[in-house]
Length: 242
Image (tube, rainbow, N blue to C red):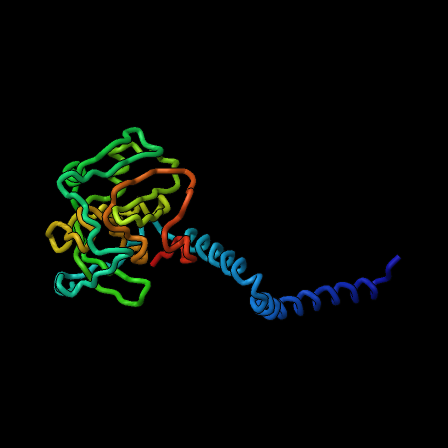
């Protein structure tokens, strides 16, 4: 039978051991990163944890800052950024958005049907992962209104979009239904130009720029992601909220 002193010694040893282990944890992690075979897996797991935590902290009703008209950069100075080409040659007259997945009304939707929804205009900051940001003026229909129109399953977790330039992207449903998330068909109160994503793009001021896909051609409502996004599949964050 253990005496009192033995029990106290063992308890103290365990407490000291835990403290020492916690002190060693950063060193062990750094040591693991020094092993090339472990680096990619550790980075992916770290990014996954970061995205998971960011998703938990996202507040559906918290709005991104909006700005006065005088703060908006002139249209000519709004930077152009594109994945492949700045004009994939969309036939604007024949264009439709193909809607599929967990919706009651799948099919082809014309731009006029999207424009018939309530229009919202907002002056918000566009932030690029490359390091630049500008305040622009954007207009369009709320993604949430469009999903209601097509009868999206309220339990679905994501949307995915495909684009005319073969770009692809996904969004979590909390972001999709955020009141500032737009199916954007206007910039500076004028129809989108080809270089800026005509005829339809995502405009989501709570997300980094690469989440705001241009030249939309397909939108799918889904419970499970088969692929996340072009840059995410290269190792970038899948959530990247602002």
